[in-house]
Image (tube, rainbow, N blue to C red; front, side, top):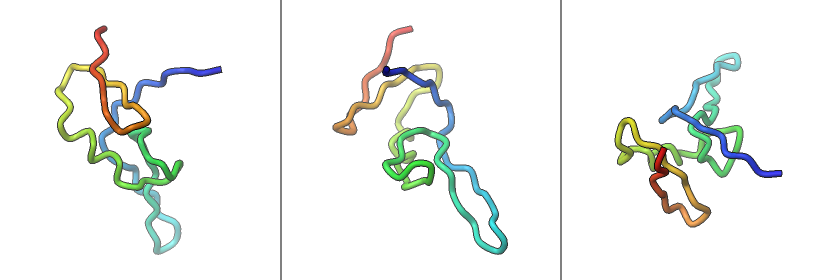
Length: 65
């Protein structure tokens, strides 16, 4: 079963583990889930108020709502 999940975050969540920081992906684009791999940088060019779908080839498509 497939599903679309809407994510609004454009950066990771820092989680402190002792003296160490772990970065958890909040944008949904990381290839290293649940950890951040920097893929959120793809969201920089997104326009506010628009919805985008990211494809396996890293391209994105605007979704008309």
